[in-house]
Image (cartoon, rainbow, N blue to C red):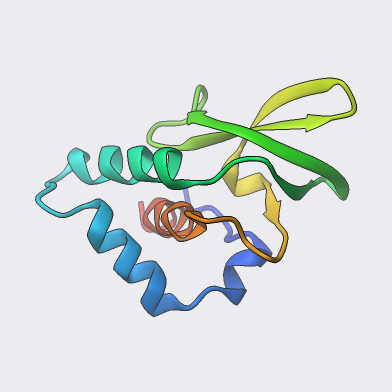
Length: 114
């Protein structure tokens, strides 16, 4: 299944995404590449940043391995006093992008090629 890139990714430099991919997957083969990308996206993404989900402003307060998709990342978003997990591919990051966003972009590019 191909996923559509979130709009924020059109503002990312493809060369920087490729560099993040290569850093996350160095010495990885097969499924290890996905694991490396997921781990780097979760470790390097500086959480507590504003984003948009379904047109609503939210705050991203965490990240975890996806519960409902193989080799994905769920972002934990907060709106009001409620928190919920949503696939990173469904979240629109806002500028300025948080530290580590390129690893998330690299994972989404990798996923789109599966």
